[in-house]
Image (cartoon, rainbow, N blue to C red; front, side, top):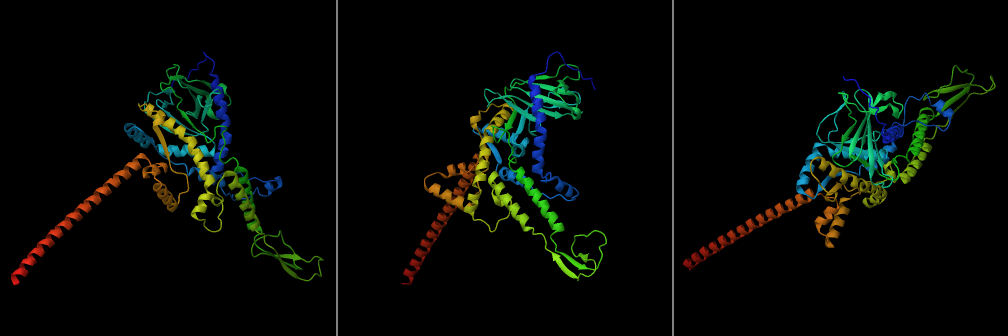
Length: 483
């Protein structure tokens, strides 16, 4: 492998330092959010003495309500597809959608945006690099993929917070070095660390990328005029995870659950005891079917006595957990029945009312993600060789509302009776152009089948009428002859 050379003729881009600090500072808090979502929760105690008591606990007990908070919203955010006003553009997009598995990429991006508060998708050409040699390969293949939010950062223009000033991505290459790419509207910059990623401590370890031939490979043109990093944010004010307010309550639930399990292990059985002239051999053990034999208090004349200690009431823990479920429901706008089972099944109308805040929260996410998807789809089409205006692009999401078929049918019928065309109602419900076209085709085929059936019935009736008339005429003639 060619020896890496260092370019020192110019000072490093000051944006590189900002990117390094932003990406470095993301790692710990974002990892914590992923751990809570995955159910890897630390067990916390209110006193150090309890920590010592429970230190030897072999089992780990958790109720992962953080995942419920995230998934309850994310399950209602499903990008079904993206429609284009132009038929040719639609055909090209459908091929790209399937080829690059954009349905799966959208699911990953939406989930990460809920878990940590932001996510990224990068679309580009010439993005493949020869990592072993440090050369930027001339690969024209279009690439679109979700990126872990711990690896990407977007810096916005302070004068116009809607405009991206630059973006950055870092990752570990195959040789164990850290790479950083800075994305601008007119060019890209490439940097590589001089030390291994595991020992990286400061921005001073980064140098402009040098190719295997010793030439400067630290910059490339951006002929598309846009920053190819697309940022999904549930909130623009601040990066906030949907789990942020749930984590303190989650810790409380886990603490109560562990306490209940320990109490069930040592205190849920009634401990029987006997006072007699027996002697205690060793430590008293608390376990089912064990009787404590205690010596007499005076050591000689106390009469034999028997009794039992009451068991620990586990219902106290369950009531406390249920109370925390109610608090978590209010704070996160997640229906309480998502956390704990409640008595009886609610009616359809009651369910719709109970889930209304959750639906509104999911719709808010959809509204915020929609402009990003329009920009991303337009840029992907540009990379593919087609210019499509964002106004001609419509991301189509599933309806996040809780839908009861009977209620939906009644609303649809009432609206249609009021004069709203059926196609308009279905379009508002989220039907795509293809689905509407298929409905028209099916309706047309059904009408043709009905007309064919009706024509056949008329012909049959006409034939039977003609046959009956002929029979009547024949019969009449025979009657005249007999007369």
